[in-house]
Image (cartoon, rainbow, N blue to C red; front, side, top):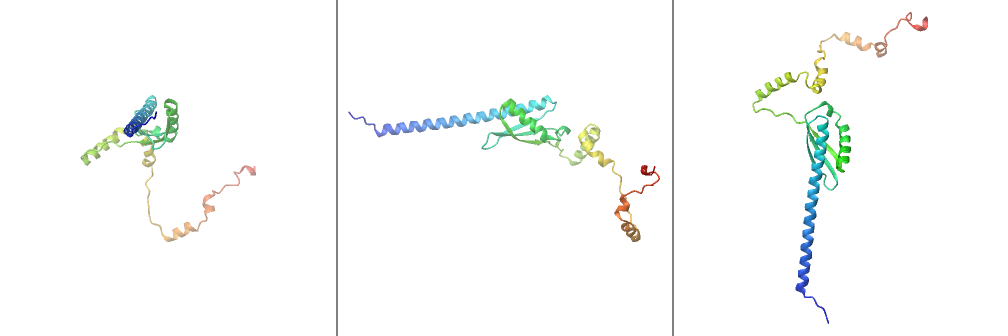
Length: 190
């Protein structure tokens, strides 16, 4: 007795195997996409919770780096003095994500948006001047940077005769740098 399989039956079996292969591939892509969305959501939530515990409201976006299991976070916040050393905060954020989510945070990008400008430029300037007056003493971060510029003495430039310049240029630098000391006040002579 010989067992023969018809070519039609073989083609039908091959088509069924190919169809099952496509279904498995589509299912794996869908599950991978869901896992990535779940991971990016978990990282975003972990970062928002971290900042919320410190009293700062931020918005966080997160994406997976192409071809790796690392993630990139995009943090948007109001400009604050505590973010001046953001590279130190990033180390803590990486540890937080690894501990809470079991994932690796590769990069962190910070964004400190500028407030919207009105359509009317004159109104925008007036509004900015009012905001500066209102923020006087409130925003220590900006005021700290401006302190040095507010107290700078005004420079005064005048012409001097050429003889005075030659006289100043002829003085040796050692004579200018070393102040003369009285030998009577010296402790060695006592």
